[in-house]
Length: 409
Image (cartoon, rainbow, N blue to C red; front, side, top):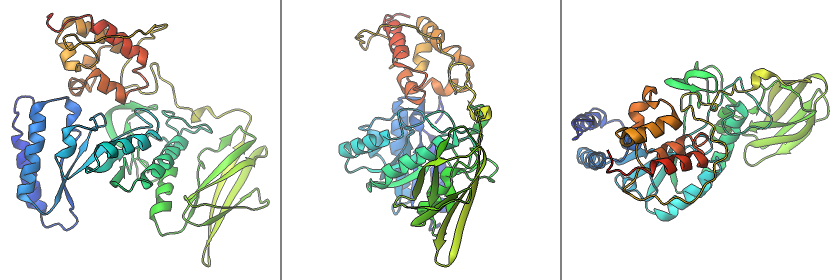
């Protein structure tokens, strides 16, 4: 569907051709109707088209299930969730908004409100860049350690909720994305479990291998985090063995067991200079081993830190001003005034509201994603870039926007 052709003629043609060309492939279980179509904003013609595509798909192939993936800010009770046989959500708690642990509350709440809806998480993930490391990983530090910790947290939440019909880590590989500029890396999305060139498996890859592969192995995480300033460190191992042994600098062996595939050897002392860490496990008569080298240093390795850019780590969103001391008061926003509930496109049609938006968000018309942004409400964008859209920023925007009536042109 384009801005002018509102019947979805091309989309309907494509779904028919897709089904007729691939109908006899036994590996196909679902036909996908849409992915994040709501990103263009609330459009009645889109809702109509999604329903028509589902009906057309069922007519072409009544034997298979239909599905679709909602963008993260679609409400739990939205009618979109009842169109297809199954539904997926592309959710990024712990990266674009909130914390990874927020998946638990959202999943339980959604399932309680929609007990008959067959729910999947069709995308989830966080960026992890091999160059960056931290002994105290946190959201948006782009470190390999946070990337791994994120997947540990989310995995534990998903495995306890059997009502999920599927979960899909986004992504297997880092991939090109020309408009992205994050973590000091341009033109690439770094959410992969494996690097862009398919050569290096990130630590998180081995968490999934521990759960999904029958091939026994042991893997020390943080091996690329070589230079360490701490006197003691925790050494984390992923393995699908029941028992793992650790030795440091040829010393005494420590043994751990684990039921969740994660083995954490705590408070391991490091001597000055190079330390050799070995882990061992047995699979019948086969011995398994992994080795890591850690260098105890006085000063941190600056190359491990993500370069902070002005306005935050994400350079491809907005250049927002410092607000200073803003005292927030209760605002009453009625339907006849502008607010952050309006789309960017709607706000840019009015010169006064356009001036307010550009004052706080910069010249977004030159942003490579501006066409897509026009369908977003400011509130929806704040969910994706929550680190930039603070409560003070949203309050300030609403205070100024709500002074302008929609009838005033």
